[in-house]
Length: 441
Ligand code: 4AD
Ligand code: MG
Image 1 (tube, helix red, strand yellow):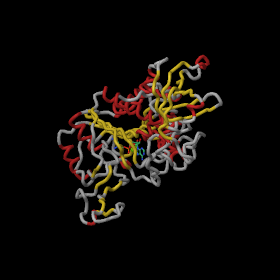
Image 2 (cartoon, helix red, strand yellow; image 1 turned 30 degrees about the vertical axis):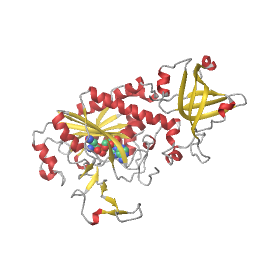
Image 3 (cartoon, rainbow, N blue to C red; image 1 turned 120 degrees about the vertical axis):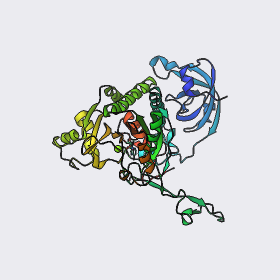
Image 4 (spheres, helix red, strand yellow; image 1 turned 120 degrees about the horizontal axis):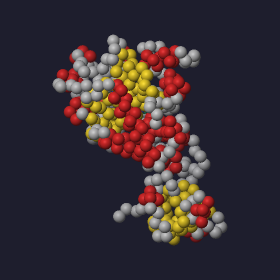
């Protein structure tokens, strides 16, 4: 009972038949005798060219939403390899027009401008393509994990702990509309009556890892694709306050090589998956070689010996800055690189020691974006004093038939920015970006 989509139309073009096409007019060319309209419905990259008479075209205008009934024919220009099919309009219906102040004008609009109109920018070809890439990427990720016996699960987003211990959490407080208020926009803070809804300070999760560990210690291989929230005041092209994270957790994994292997296989599989779906990016070809793996200590030595004058000089014990990451991926390795065995002092409580002063942590750094994945092997055993307050259940869990286990988190928006290339900002890869200082819709 649903109308035909352009995606299904292009899969098997019903040449010579009459079809209904629904969509928005992306461009319009009117002349005395004929009118050409490019109509897209967003289900695929390729729009359809509609050929209409001047009478029919009276209803058509740039941006408008339309239904067009017509005959699908091979275009006369097909031989030139240009427009293959066109729709000879027989009946034109208008759903709605855009106003004079419609911000999505035909000319190439700056991404910064479009960001201020997130509810409308999906009508541009560029954003439309990116959001479809997002959908196909999530599909590819799920396909890889399912074939590798991972179970998709759903840990909570409301939590009483800060998994990463970075203190960048959003606090959740109950608010409710005042019952006796006539002004519906007035809210009262229930906190005035009760200290907290849950009896303990509650946050939006920064990472679901700890709950995912609990689930892995019972189902062996689990993953979730979930929003994560961080109150980081970073105004960069790779930070969002609300982002989506793929988190993967495996029991019975004993080495960093095995953990890095899962990440490498996943991304390589994904690239092949997207290629099969018709996506192509020049820089993907360089991803198929074996990826480099270096230790944090080696990375610091490479940076120190680079001869560069750093804004932030590399020093053992400090986190790698974005300029350090960029040097490793874009200059030194010229490709993705896993950096392993970080100083224990700069990593969270749950990581397994790999020497006196390092832990079995792993970051995947990729060109242009920097850190794409963060993961580690988890502790075999833990003392109660090592566990942050409120996480007594985590201590208790590791007492009960713990196994070697580990996992990682991968930022979906960073993955998309990396796949898309061209210095894409994470704000363009998510439909409604949230970052400090800006919520436009
Ligand atoms: O390295 P992170 O902080 O690791 C964790 O949260 C682990 N608990 C994950 C795990 O082992 N299950 O975050 C993981 C990834 C980063 O590598 C990055 O890609 C992304 O999440 N990320 C962000 N993406 C966009 N905006 C932000 N503010 C991000 N913070 C982290
Ligand atoms: Mg990290």
